[in-house]
Image 1: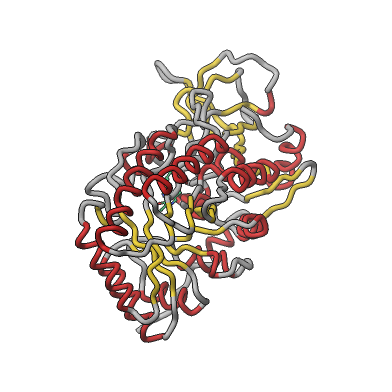
Image 2: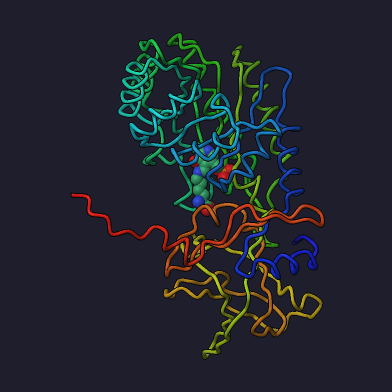
Length: 423
Ligand code: LLP
């Protein structure tokens, strides 16, 4: 696996210390272009939404916005980060299964954007607030196509009992939601949304989703007279975490999806105006790296531990999903691997293991350990467990580097402390 030039990485570490998260800016730009250049059709408009939950920062918001992307956001915090960094609300798709009145009011107040509605309760709330405030919005209804994608239970979203969306089988419920939208003077129904899960390797899973969605839309249009302008197929495209992962590349997946959609549209005589996808992980995941400093080592009867100065606080994925990562010892890259270390963090928890078996050369305290592909859902799911504070985030571009998020140090953590009487 590749990483930016070792001397640049070492220079970053000299400035910031460890742990530090580093992104290769050029690689993110390449990923953005791979999507924008290949998810294209002359039969319908295409939109690529950056699922900002994968890593939400002002810097990435500006990058993706300048490149011409749209955005998937799921909270007031994400909406705030995106809009304060120049993203117009017209480029936002507001997701989530339980948007709060505050989030809805603030979002509507920013201008006309898309809202992806998860359930009838939520729709009632959105319609009421939009009416009261006199603010319009474009609506997609999230349906759950029931397509099994082979991925971890916690990141599979389209199983029958999922908390997300309305099951595709519940046509009456969905039609009722479309009617509620159409009855509103402020809301305009645009179409449907689906998302089948995350870290999906097989392009065929997306073809299954497309098939299911077109079956459904054809029935909605022909049997029930629903006008469908937009179809949003969600995200979920896999990346390489270790040498064992071999996902289809982005251009291939995009082209297959486009051909599939064009074909479905033509054979069914449908005229959907806009088709969207929402990649998150695959835009930033394999462009991000975490560098730690190795500290103490320990041998047990069957294991050899190499402890690092971060862990589950900056990367919860191994503990939460059994996610696998690969690393290299940046200090001894030319030396052959002679050991099989357990790379464990410094949090007070046995499950705080980042890599269960890492083939590395004999490693020493002070060595720099780089973990690959930590760019998605690493920082965004980080906690401050054990008051570790989140690492700084640095963007490297050729031979220059800039800090885009500062280290969360003792003072930043202390800034939240208060002793203010509230009644
Ligand atoms: N659209 C919707 C509606 C989603 O729920 C998600 C991810 C995406 C798009 C982007 O999916 P991606 O292209 O990044 O796979 N924390 C988990 C992943 C959770 C994904 C949540 N939704 C992880 O670390 O693997």
